[in-house]
Amino acid sequence: MSIRKLFDDSAARYDLDRQRLIPCYHDFYNLPLEIIPFHQDRELRVLDLGAGTGLFSAGVAARYPRARLVLVDIAPAMLQVAEERFAGYDAGRVVFQLLDYARQPLKGVYDLIISALSIHHLTDGDKKALFAKIYRSLEPGGMFINADQVLGENAVAEKIYKCRWLQKVRASGISEEALDAARKRMQEDKMSPLSSQLDWLGKAGFDDITAWYQYYSFVIYSGTKPLATNS
Image (cartoon, rainbow, N blue to C red; front, side):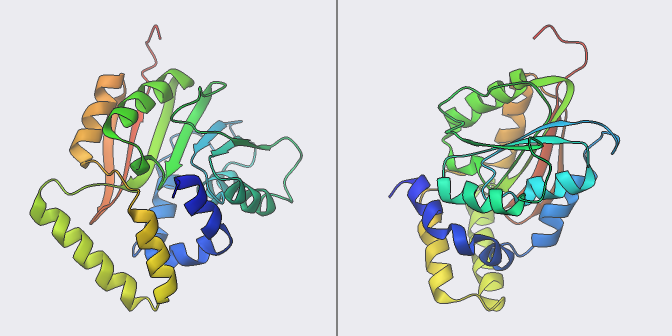
């Protein structure tokens, strides 16, 4: 089954399930907002890759009332939920694009590019290519923030990640149906170690690369496009 079909099928219940499937849910979605380096009055141009239901973008939009956002996703049903989330916003402030960001070009130039729980679906090669594409799509001084899941740096770490995740998710009271659906989606995961991804960011040209947070497999990291650049 394709990634698109898996996420279309789960779109309606996705946000509710996510609170149970991410043991560090509140940190995971709030901390990225705190590391955005721009003044809150700035008219930010924001691109959300794999935006899903728009949860990450909603946090950015609330904190940056003058920001203009482009939400990109491969699953139409996810974008439909996102459109409902932003229904009360001024026309043109939030744009929705049905797009395979790993295969198709990114349009426009942005101050901030964000992603949450999406890039881990790409192969290592596609991640490297995407980081280069993101770099080219940022204004000098722009930031990329990724909140995602990573592979353990070794077999012991990976085993602990999986074991602790399952314990905590089951303790949350999630239904077996929702857990089974999550496990089905996880079969499509192609996670990479955090250290590798930070290295790829550096090779793409990013500066000030920082791993801000880690809770087992859940991480938040960022990189900035240098101000003095010819690309």
